Amino acid sequence: MYHPLPLLAFVSLTASAASAAEGHLGQVREQVRSGAPATSSAPASRTASMCSSDHADGDGVLGSLVHLVFGGGDEAVACRDEHAERPYRWAGDDRDRERAGSRPREPASPPTRRTFAQAEYGMRDADLLRIGARARWDAEPPFGCEASWDRFYESSGRLPSTGTGWDRLDLIEADAVYRLCMSEHASLRGGLGARAMHDAHGTDYGFSAVLGFDALVAGPMRLTVDLALGTLGHASLVRIRGDLGVGIGSFEPYAGYEYLDIGGVELQGPYAGVRVHF
Image (cartoon, rainbow, N blue to C red; front, side, top):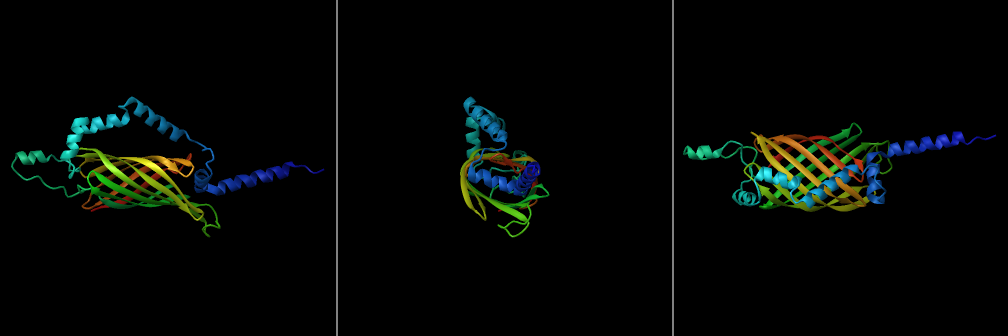
């Protein structure tokens, strides 16, 4: 008598293998293009609730950060006007040199302007890698624009779409930003932008709100933090990244960590790169 259990076991193993072969990038495609329920939407939900509570309070995390770094509303506006053309200076106190009758020394690194291009490499694990490029241009302070491109590679066996053992997927983003506040050593910016996901099967689009913070923390060391909340196709998107760089002339090597959630699929990992300031 025929027993169905061996057949069911074979079907189950085959389905599991197909799911494993799909990989993280395949899951991202499924979330973006089908709008299937996310496997884990807790990070996005927590972020959304935090943003909602901060907005309701009127003086939440963002307000506290602005007040702590820039001193307060009127002071922040005055500080922004005072440093509109020179938002970044060395931590050394130039006022001491002025009182001593000498001319303040211009910082050699990092540059005062935030126009730069950068290239970086990151990874989630040995099977999921990322290369990326970013650029920021201060058009007419306090306005500017930012753009980024990231290509993800994942080892998933030989695929018909690529003809190789690596699956790949591109993320592209372009934002218009405005400097919300700035002081002698720090700057807070926000903006809106569009993003796209591209692969061999097509292109999907979305939008995002972005928030970024830059600060000179000690000598030539610069802290950069970026947050993006938005959509991509049918999926939600949360991207948080932070890195610490060291200015050496016009160059700034840096290293950091990025958290990326697309529809509940997490692609987080460390990264490192080099910025070139202009």
